Image (cartoon, rainbow, N blue to C red; front, top):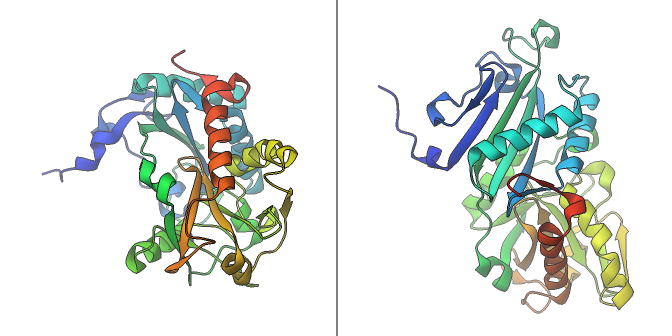
Length: 310
């Protein structure tokens, strides 16, 4: 007897090149167990969101997918134009203008060793599910975070968006166990790295938006776009400048604001760090301004969005 899958109510559509088409029945949404994606984490992926019928930063996500694949010597089975058309088709088949879209390119099935050359061909999977963003109260009150004890990925492995996410899983587990909303990782030198699936930044006493050096983290498409949008805040004097630099725990303790960036989050303020207030404990002006800029960008800037239903 098949086990119940109540969570599958959120699953809208999936494409698999092994099935040769798009399915909407959750029990058909599967990956071969001998695909090296499953038993070795040997593959790359991107997660993007469709809002009001448009996929935000689809091109930026696909370009990063290509860089990740090249980094692990995985040849894309389709060019980026074909992958984009496929993503749009599957999203449209999902039938909902607000959804989450995940694209996986795997080494492919062919055995259970670590030898990538035993795989017959890469796997291509597109999964569309309902979009679940943080509750509005999270943006009004801020969220809780803590400093993780889980070792962060090293520079190379951190910069590749591969499907080996065990450290990320342990970061999230730690947050749940310790009663935080998010865990923030430190690298081997004690410098701020990233969250489970989130980039981190802070605003210091000089009104600088400070971000970790991008060569030791997986720099997200959202934070890259935020850096571009933040120039408007520099011009207005809300920020003095935007800067990448090594950040330590002490920088977090002294921060006026701590910010999380991500595809589902946009810009999410942290107002408590390990139980202590960040700044004055309230959501700060930079978090509010950046969130508004990103959400305006999502809904009203066709240059960075791909139409699906419109």
